[in-house]
Image (tube, rainbow, N blue to C red; front, side):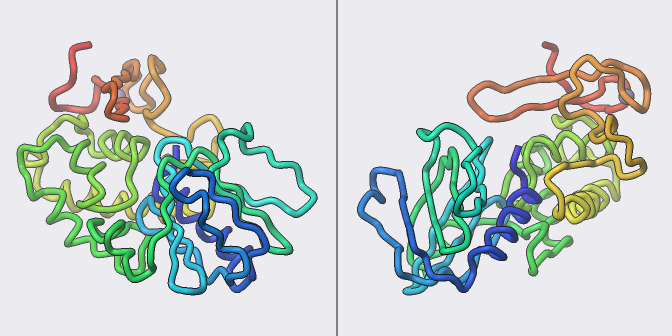
Amino acid sequence: MPEGDTVWLTARRLHTALAGKLLTRCDLRVPRLATADLTGRTLLDVTPRGKHLLTRVEGGLTLHSHLQMDGAWRLYAPDERWSGGPGHQIRAILATTTHTAVGYRLPVLDLIRTIDEPSVVGHLGPDLLGPDWDAEEAVRRVCADPARPLGEALLDQRNLAGIGNVYKCELAFMARVTPWLPVGDLPPGVPERLVSTAHRLLEANKERFDRRTILTTDRPDRKLYVYGRKNQPCYRCGTPVRRKEETGRDRISYWCPGCQSGPAPSN
Ligand SMILES: [Zn+2]
């Protein structure tokens, strides 16, 4: 699942391959961009902002994309077979003479003026992997509504940008509270620790697609504490890990009822 670290690494790879190069092909397969053509323009840079990707091109234009649940940008050499999914899932193709970037399953794809970028990313809170990361401000925003469940507060990109369901679950586990605990009920010092742990985890994972929150071991079978481990024993206390999906909201929670305190759904 793409979270801030995946988007950061995706942006860096696209930037390294494409920045400063002339676009020799542009194919944007969403109806309202059907006539847009960036061919002949130089791609200037690819910048991540939270979970958003901003691909800036010459002439003051920005191709804005968001990966949400399972979108991806893949890079291919000119003669390489495209392997990111069936053709009907392709939303964007940008090519130079040396690389082709293919955007699969992008739920968000807009072409905007670069000066209008704040309209799509201006609402974001401090970016966990951004140059303007501000831990204190992130803590202030996460705690601003004491009644709000922790999981919701962590996922809200206006509080801090870059956390998705995986990190939400892992952070709640590491703080020993459930994602449904109101942030106002967190013990003193815990919000600060949560935010600094979030920053540390995303930094530790930004160079690799193979995400790991258990940083104390390299074991390939022990990467995440609870996410994706339904019914498997908690590494800390042995209780089977539980899973709850809130339908229609893209909210998936895994937690250990044995060592995470706070409210939890009954089924
Ligand atoms: Zn446990």
